[in-house]
Image (cartoon, rainbow, N blue to C red; front, side, top):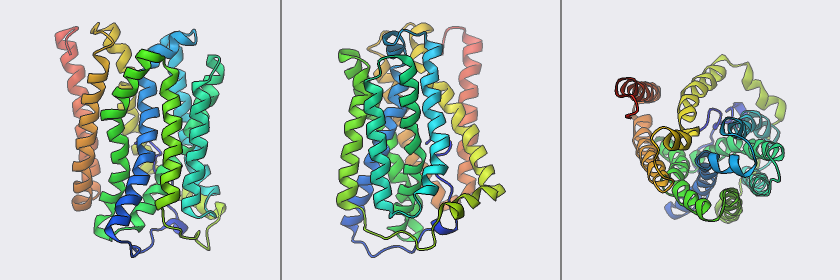
Length: 317
């Protein structure tokens, strides 16, 4: 999940008591919301995996092409609080459909980019609904289950993102190698439309909170705890994405592996994310913030160990 995947949770956004939903209805709801996480995961991670390809296709070098990744991240940062706040008066199911609609259009336009400048604009627009979707979807998921299962319900949405890293990214990478990088973003547009359909079919028709307003939503930014949480998330996830963004380039230029190896490497990375998501959901319900601290320490040590091994072994990883 990106630094601001969870939009600010404010007084009017407190999770309501669990609705009386049958287990089957909850499963369909979480599947619909998870499909959105899958679509976001594919565009977020697959864009990094095909960075060398669209760099060549748009006539720029790879460091310059990396700005397209930064443009998407900037959209996430800007869009998460603004879209969540100004959508506060809408029923959440309608807001989710609207966010996925914007996501579908922006990714389709990314696939049609005639040059790198328009690519930057469309990647920024693609990032706008990212954080707001996860924030609103998390509230919908949490409100559909009892309190003791809320962390696991939210993790189900994120499971869509982690499954994207295991299956979606390698498959899209293969398709892109065969038919061109533009297919990466075109496929994401189709997944976004599928998410809109599933949400329309299975999300509960709850009305908007009667006291919700953009001004009230933005008041959360006065809370130091909100800024601390966002800061910790930005630093923690920023480190991981700094590695992932140039993983394809490093594998090709440093380890000199062929393009056929890349999908397998991304799949292994995805298996780690998928497994960690399951374990952290259980740990979060049981240990709370201690689990989050433990995950950040684990990530830091893992990355430090990779750097240490490379300094000792030279070209060996």
